Image 1 (cartoon, rainbow, N blue to C red):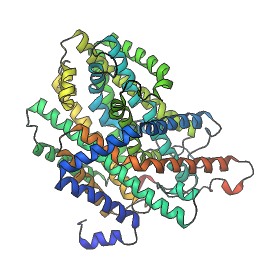
Image 2 (cartoon, rainbow, N blue to C red):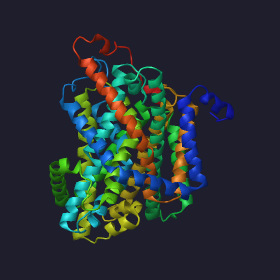
Image 3 (cartoon, rainbow, N blue to C red):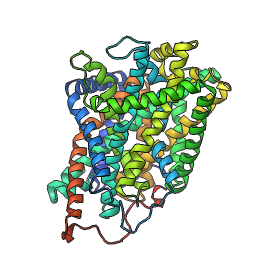
Image 4 (tube, rainbow, N blue to C red):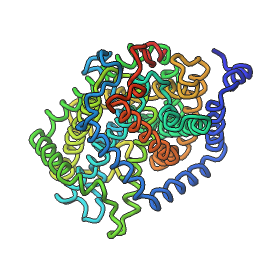
Length: 524
């Protein structure tokens, strides 16, 4: 489909969510291309101010999602099915978990798998670096950032959408629980604003993640093939990614993303097992057990820790709070995607699969990669931790050189990163199209082209800075205003599920077995 003025006019006609979101995102994209330095400085300044001045608010929201997910899994609503009472899950448990993982944070784990533990090992907050205490703190902080908090945010966002979509037969939109809470014209207007903010959060979250992925692919090609680390190389990588994910939108969730996710999951598991087997195996598993115990015993303290007495609010804002808001930024996108593949699961089963299993794998991943990295620093040649502080994008590929067939592993890692990014961008383009086409199960190709292209433009604008910090700031910018929407969504969900479980309240019972939305073919 060729995009023309007539096409765009047709898409805009009578669709305030699409036109509002398009204008907002296009304005930021144009700003980034015309004045990349100004946009980078403004984005960094805005996020730094919001994170340092309102840090307590973001941490309470994130911890609140973890507490809520625990209550929903273990409480009276655990047996409620996200679908009709007689409905069975569409995907096998293995495929379901593989898609959860690929959609949630696959490329990020490769980017930070070695880098983050070594970064905190070298420069932990409030204690001397490169010590045994620093190593333990490094894994504790890394597990906090990638563990139960992250997947609880994803899980709750997805559960709200899945409940209204599959159990109440409503449209899979951000605005649906809000309009259920506030019926009438006011609720519809608030819902439209919520949908626009949701699109804004998804676009910025995707652009920030694709930027970091492109920088790591560029660094990997530089290490493996000696290609130049130039802006032109970054543009070429984004162009290839763009062509691939826009082409793949025609394949469908039930075939394309399912197949790619299963392949990626198998390759990722084989690679991490290879490193565990040929690396310091005993040290790695000792690290896993030690860090797991430390994480679980310290979680109640960490869930509310902001370090104000140490004067380390800047550190908390740059790391812990940035991560928490990053997961909130991906909440609308990953939430709709997880909801799509979780139909027919009970809330208890859903929480176990979406929160517990990926968290355990993340802890294992960091214990293997980070544990081997710390072992190299403490007992081997070292040098990777220093590289992390200089160019975090190269750290993983330099780390792989310490293992047999390191160059081959490097190419495998590049394949994993690329496919993870393509799957995320592919799914994101579809979700954005669905969110701006009034919940259409098969949004027109024009929507996918528009949003896929805008995400690529914003990614290129962010790449002008060449900075991971700017990419992180971009990823969280959209989530800051969207956090209020999430809170209202949760209130609408709790009110609806409580009404459903109230004895004798027939009006609140789930709808009869009419097929709900988000069928397998919708992604094409």
